[in-house]
Amino acid sequence: MPRKHSRMPCANAPVRPVAMFFPVNDGGEIITYEVVSYLAWPREVWSAQMDDGRMNKAIDDFSNSPFTAILFYKIKPPAPMPGEIQIGPALLVTPLRKHNP
Image 1: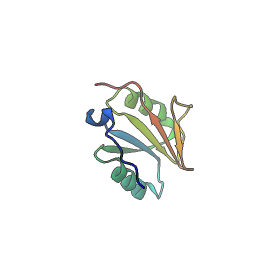
Image 2: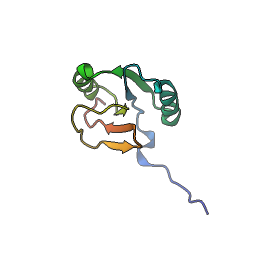
Image 3: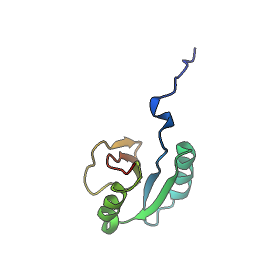
Image 4: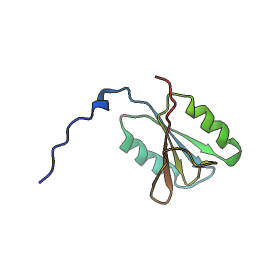
């Protein structure tokens, strides 16, 4: 029998957006972005193509923004990040601890 789920206390918290990084010129980013956006609703998902040269700056910029997490699709962050979670072979989620209220 299905269990009834109660609302989590954070359900009324402000919904912060998520950033999603893709490699440059990858063929699967559009459908992956659409699926992640659908599953993340009502949270906004922003996307950006990344190469190794821009990755560190982008992570610093997003870490000091209202974004709550960064998703890495088919790319790895330049260094291990605290709290990162591997979801399948191509997707890594990194919660951002520092964000503006």
